[in-house]
Length: 559
RNA sequence: UGAGGUGUGGCCAAGCGGUAAGGCAUCGGGUUUUGGUCCCGUGACCCCAGGUUCGAAUCCUGGCACCUCAGCCA
Image (cartoon, rainbow, N blue to C red):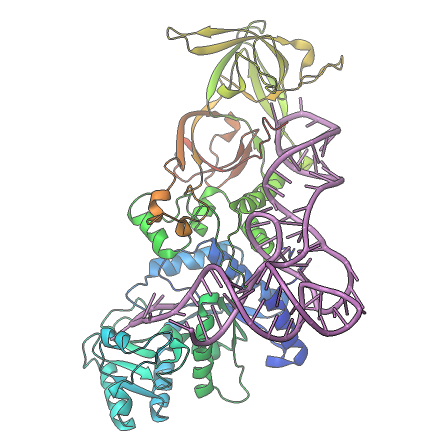
């Protein structure tokens, strides 16, 4: 499926179209998705990925995948691998354009030297605390760093020695000489390089000084010929700095990137910060980054979300600058819509209740036709075995059938989907009074589930032949948090107190139809009347495990 | 009290001076061998107050609210 663009327009498209009209950048559109490999990608990243790759595609340009790996302390190849895998899975192709900011370290270093020579950067001896204490505040200026007074030669020498490893971590930095009284705090002599005697996951021990985000990002964009550098709103106040660095290094005639900011995505009932997601993983509240309850791409994938549904979601939420919290119901709507078209229907009984058909011959089995997908006739039909003893969903039977209950109850006739009309004649209880079996009779004239005499039954329920069904485990998921905005709920100091204790429910005595035997992990189905489910990779040769992606919409009790 | 942003129905979001798109959710109704799908229908004087204009969500002025920035994180 092609990513269809439902939102008519957004301000970024306007900007790009305006640039194109003016012939800027030679009519090129080059974007990039620049994650830091310090965690797994989540649905918020998906918004950015779809935006950047989508724009490139729309305007006949290209989109790079760039690892923003300038901080070896937090980064790891495990994350790099997962990012590459996730972006690919989402359906995007960066071709040859996979880059690493760390590949630009040498060039970045040279630019730092250039700034020193221009008298625009200096080596500082301040500690982190001192830098912080002298930065000033919103309404008061900062104080100048003594390092500011150093001459070019001394700075050059000191900076070279920083690179050479002459100084311990935290003792020196390279700072830009801008303005300690700038109203924008980011312009108050920002740190360009810090010393970290740390092994980098790609450059190994080559470097012991690493560039800061501000000194690396815009230049990386420049190196790659990015035309539109799209990032989230918190970088808006960094834009003057982004431009300041480009002012110092950009050569005439080369593409000069422009930073454009949009509002990041918040999804209701979950958290999106990498720190908090990491915390959930580390405290073992979830089973890992790919726990189906996580808003990570890997979690959504394991949950059964399709790339198409996520791309559709990204299109529908739009792109703007206003803070927003998108209702997770929209995401759910997107998978339902996608899976409704594609997922084959099968029968599963999550909470089995035995049914015996008194007038059906013992030992007899017949095969009935079942439609694989009413939305798509080409998906054909399959045979479903029917016999005297069946299982139905426990909640599809009630002794007291109140007004709106259309399912099985004493004396009531209902349709067993694809099979017959059955009428309940009674129940069998165990010692404790629990119903363990429902007795019924069937009407042989209603084979296939319809009646020639035109009589209607309101209810249709699903069922499985007792001797043919196979066992399975089904994991039901619910929202991870009980609050719409766990990170922004008043009177709540710790978001973790809002974790939903019932976000996972494991049912280990479920039954599914025999055709599911050997189903491959990742395969998606609609369990008739229940929802969309997919095979989890925890499944083994003799035990299937399913994840519930999302329930079917349910209007029970609403009419 | 600084700088940069944002405010359109419950949640997103178009709109770019000519009289409020669309989606999700909700609630009605119809079809239906999934209480699914599908199909119909349902809601806004656009943060507030002034002003400009024949006409303003769109322009101007003044408020108010919320978000971001004081990591050697990104």
